[in-house]
Image (cartoon, rainbow, N blue to C red; front, top):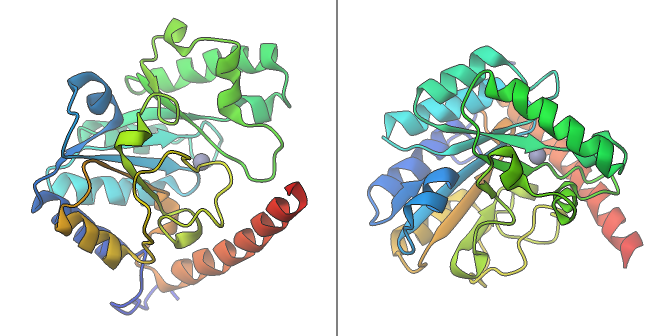
Length: 262
Ligand SMILES: [Zn+2]
């Protein structure tokens, strides 16, 4: 299967991601990682780029190189589960000048026990800090668990751990149009339960990456935040089909979860 190249019209490929990077560098926006957004005070005309590395870290590595080719730095949030926590890959992405962040899921792992969860947060953060400097974090949202990982900060303060920001809590989204590839639909809230941002100034619909590129080029948004899950982006046809089918199954599952909640 690996020998087949997927047709140009397919979305969520690395060549499509290259087009996104091209659109960003040829636009009037400044591309920023989360750390730089929070510390440099660019209030206008920026695109915050953030990636959640949930699975397949080698695909994040490919994306990181594509951004580097365009002179862009972004933030890669790594989970500390066995498949994802690959020191060689994390170091390589960090060496390209990207920010590494911690994609934590400690409330899930501790089954809701906050005391256990915060100890886990501290030790996993220390492991990640052996490889790269970590100053920002972002929760992982497992649609099948009943906890929301960022709720740990109702009780504790991430500043106490040398962390300056949490991607859901520290960015003022009333000022930033937010697009996520969750559900492969960019800004459909239909399929995303936990990585949704309530306060999104962009009210339209973006169905494809080409439409996102058009929006970037139109320069109509003050600021933009783009979240991708690099495991969904591949030029390998077999792997691409797998992601498409797996996403459909997950979307169906999520619809059922939402249905039960309402
Ligand atoms: Zn995640």
